[in-house]
Image (cartoon, rainbow, N blue to C red; front, side, top):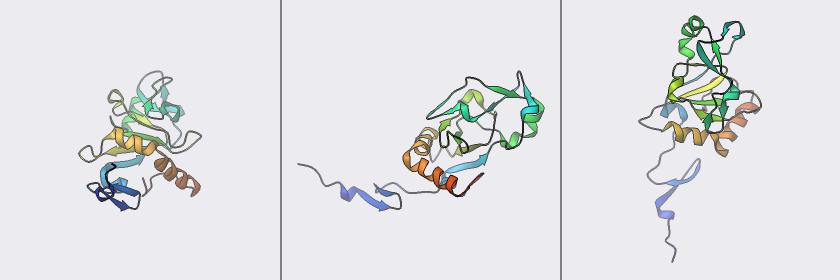
Length: 159
């Protein structure tokens, strides 16, 4: 005999969800949503310094630290408001790997990113790994595609 589970679920804008779940906009569960450096930084490249994360470092569900490049520390410090923090969720929002998302490892705290969507989840509300899974999901990718189709660059009320 199969139990009727419909009583334990409710309908929401996103479909059928458990009764004790709520649907929130991203800005309601995050401390910060920004875009990394969006200016030419090649003149600030150094053999060592502050790592700069590029799209090729962001893979579906993991961070690839191969082929890192570095920025001048003074330049990075002057742009500290754009820095990514440990456990931020990084999403590629331009280019061929649009929508790929990972969680920034702790050892890269305060690094810079190049035109990356940086989302700092409020860890009391949402786990960074869960948010990464959501942003990598079909629904998350569909949202990114809608922004791309609309020419949406930069910060968005939908993310």
